[in-house]
Amino acid sequence: MTSHRDQSWTWETLLERPSLVLARGFVDSEQANSLLDELDRELPWQRPSLRLYGRTHLIPRQQVWMGDEGIRYRYSGQTFTSEPWHPAIAFLARRIKDCLTTRYLPKGLQDSQAIKQMNVNSVLINRYTDGNERMGWHRDDEPELGPDPVIASVSLGAERPLRFRFRDRSRPSFNIWLPHGSLLLMGPGVQHELEHALLLKKSHGLRINLTFRHVFLRQ
Ligand SMILES: O=C(O)CCC(=O)C(=O)O
Ligand SMILES: [Fe+2]
Image (cartoon, rainbow, N blue to C red; front, side, top):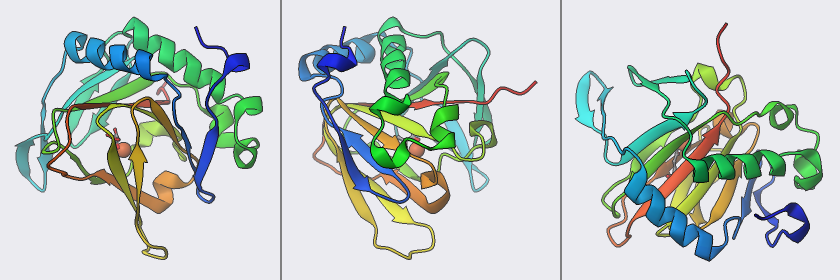
């Protein structure tokens, strides 16, 4: 078990405002290798179809929605009910929660209310067999994620760039390459100001990404 006292990674600030910070080696490479292999074999991967502009398409990747019991997640006209936590993923969720407590956060984020409120209770896991699988431009701004979603994204397998663009085009678009075992924190404001996409890139191999989220429960 890794504790913060022997923490071997640090946050790297990639964008100040809104905040995008990356922790390379958040999962060390040996653990990341076995996690990639284990999740690939053990998760109940699905390839749902979604409605987009009135037409139904199979999504160009596979996914699993996982989390605390009874959490539902809606997008593009479908509702997904969470799978129970896989033990290795529950462990990662625990570590992420610990890292989001004030003393471990980078300076600029220590006073963030959105991060203080962030209580990881679910994760969307995407599996991209190769570079032909992808995720189109979007924001993670579903109402159940609250007014200012904070998202913690762990990447395993092939290193691919996540492309970001400002909605108002006020600044240039850019890539963030997400190495095996890295954690990218999309901080407050990111889902308001930017869109992101995992674009097609022919040469890449298997990649699994886990976006840890806080779904606010309706009463
Ligand atoms: O695969 C990725 O890195 C992106 C995943 C993503 O944007 C999402 O799950 O909302
Ligand atoms: Fe996303």
